[in-house]
Length: 162
Length: 159
Image (cartoon, rainbow over all chains, first blue to last red; front, top):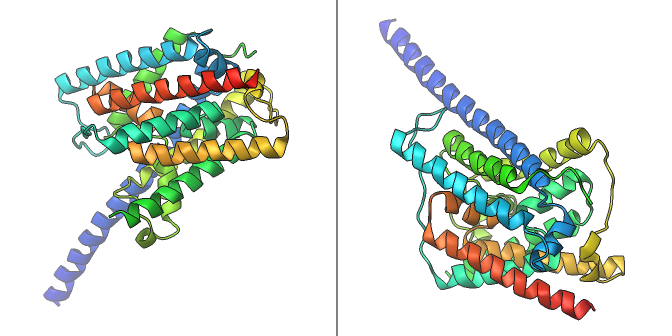
């Protein structure tokens, strides 16, 4: 009888621990959708989904987007520096804020070059293409499709070479 | 064209803080290309060599068009379906089918290139830049240089 009770308590504790994990996983998924929505909204606000601004940027006629990016890096770096000084942890789970420092490799250089050509052909990037879909810009459809295909091809290529 | 575009310095300021917010809430940098890899991986992890992916990125990418829609509805207060690319029309074929093909091909380069480079503008320039990751900053410089050279060529050829 005592064994039954203690094992029941044990399984209740285990289930509530699992339940907590399920909840926090669900919360993180929702948080990701919300963050994505905010970013999509921002991308449109700054003009990243405006084709004319992309064209003028490449032709050195308008500097809206380069200034945005420069300011974003400066602001972001300042904010991250402040976080590091405060030894801040993540809001929900009080975990370490991690940033993986990547290495400069040939794939990085080749990949970035290829990406740039794609950017020039579409006046889009993976983020803005999705935001454009929300705006009703149908050009987002072939671009997103293309990105999925390109990603798929990479999957096959990377599997073969490893 | 659009008078709904906010001032560059303000936009950059907001995006910068957004990146920091993303770090605070999710514990890692934002990224727009990994979500596509998550989607593709669902075809079959064992036939793909995508490496270790953050599954939450898929949800981030799903959120992007919601934000775009919100902007169209509440800020622009108009929702128009369009295939027009403004000044960029000069670079692409006039024929809609050909245009779609070129855009698809361009997308393939974006997708493949981003996986090879380990990220796109969001992941490398914005998030990587915020943590002063040298590889990310280099990737950003190459993104820009490659895109600018290619675009200038395309605009010249278009004339």
